[in-house]
View 1 (cartoon, rainbow, N blue to C red):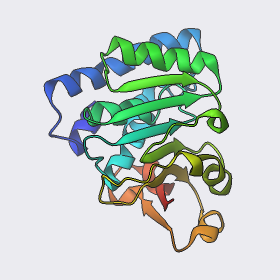
View 2: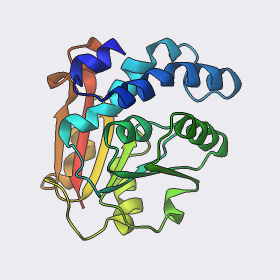
View 3: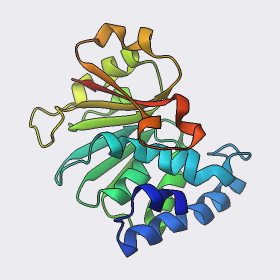
View 4: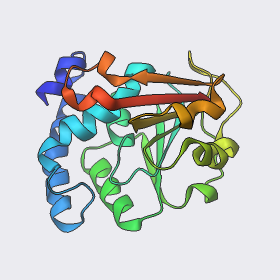
Length: 206
């Protein structure tokens, strides 16, 4: 939690309590349903929560924005982003039911009222959203094909509506087809920890 507060010092008491509750909840659920690598649970705040909040270093969503988290797994990046943006509606989807069960229970337990969840495939989700977020779910070309139908026309934010994707490693070839619409943000410009040296947010306008 100290690492989160280092970069997001303006959190309300409620937001701090919600974030602080995540470790115990995920540790408990992870013992039953493996949603995070068991070796990695001690790094929950650095590798999962702060990593998710890397998107908030690129954009702070305006109130009224609708965001879909595609392939949310146990709730990343959607749940940390929903805690940070109480005025934004998040819809978390995943094709694996047990992962959605964990994310649903975590969101309910910490009292998140701006989150809905669905056990579904991205291809089946028809609702419109201003942004889609994801964390290394599939190659950008495939992701854009799937989510193009979901991007709403009305604009609420400084960035045009589109995709915000957490990725790692060398991405030049992956972003090449979108060179005029894609921007890659290096997370080591925002966060000091060595974990973020190769981590990026890729934004593609849709």
